[in-house]
Amino acid sequence: MSEFAPIFLSLVLSLLVSLLLLCLSLRPVHFKLLGQSVLRFLSILLFIFLVESLGAENGLLSIAYCDTFSPPGGLPEEAVNPTEAPPLPQPAPQPPVIPELPHPLISDEARRSLLYSRYLSLNGASENNLERMVSIIYTQAGVERMIEAALVSDGFSPHSILAQYREIRGLLHSPQGELLTERTYRSYLTQIHENGTRGSVPYRRIMRALQTRNLFLDRRE
Image (cartoon, rainbow, N blue to C red; front, side, top):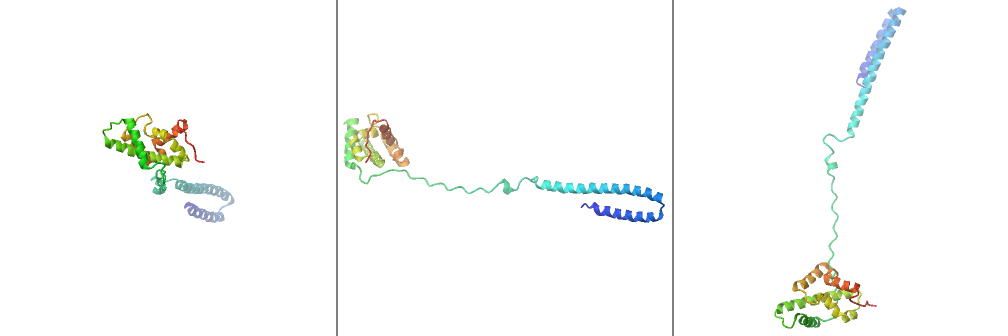
């Protein structure tokens, strides 16, 4: 209840005691008038008591209502800046897939010999830059060996690959009918080591020729 309640009760008790004493000394007519005055006074006191009580309750409701909202300073720091979840571990990068054959279809000596003869036929017998020629032949041999291993890994018949090696070699090393630059051949090796054999330009060139039926290779049974 309100703090006004004890005061109100004290006033009511005092008034009742005074009214009792007066009733003992007054005549009936005077008693009636006094009773009416007392009732009016009690009504006023009761109204004040009710207003005071309702005001106190509204104050409590206002406090409770304010408590449900954030204070002027905003939300607590924990709510504004929630703890971030730890980052998920990233999967380890997969190494490039570079198939290899334990026994290549052609030995390195025979391969380089064939590439040397081909180099002379495309570049002419008068080759003055011996270092360039050796670099290109060895680079072509490395690219050819890796493409060969990938084709066998993909299920193509080794006998079919050997039978079509002239066409395969032309697609790998001279797609326009002439030798490419030394830098281009080296870039093929870089692509294979970084992206895997199947992610290199020469391998995709072979796959495109198979799809367009410019090259025919049998599958292993």
